[in-house]
Image 1: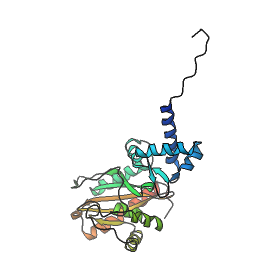
Image 2 (image 1 turned 120 degrees about the vertical axis):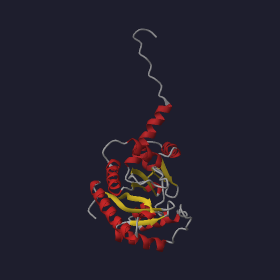
Image 3 (image 1 turned 60 degrees about the vertical axis):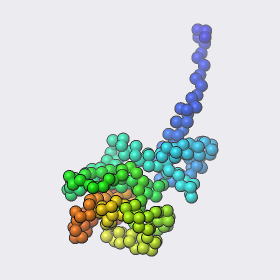
Length: 266
């Protein structure tokens, strides 16, 4: 190359271009108020529909987005929540929830969890945990999609979803993980969820985990239910009177957490 001759521009790197666009798609899905379609992504980001579809499926294959075949929409996936739960250090829902569960766990000397609602998965995932000194006899899966139909942590927030969404979630549900019990019919489940809303909390015994008792209450943000606070312990730790009193106190804690998250007064 002669002196003064301009250096030719570097050829674009196809791999880095794909990574950049995939991150743009992921950011768009994360910022959306709910599930998005291929057309939403393509129109907003100025991509060809085929490119948007390919990038969404790449992210779906790695668990960063989830897909709903029935509605042909996409939402944030469990891998994204797992990474966020491990890496986030900024003030936000997870940090506020962590403070709440640790405070309750220290007061009760029991294990307390925050379950995050995953709309795209029609599931919930435990993303924050506080432990007392009483050792659990069972293992709790963290950052993993779990049932909304079985267990207090799921039912507490399921009770505050629209009726048609509850019906869709129930139709896709399988037997109870701990007992193999068949799913209830819709009328039975709706009756149970009405009681949850009336009481302000939910109690379950051995539905997700053998021998476990769960006491949970819904947590709300500005746009509605975002998750649940749940205390879990071996069932023999509580009598009927104690567990009802605990439910009321967990509901109070969930109400305070909802206030901290900017929920409207309920």
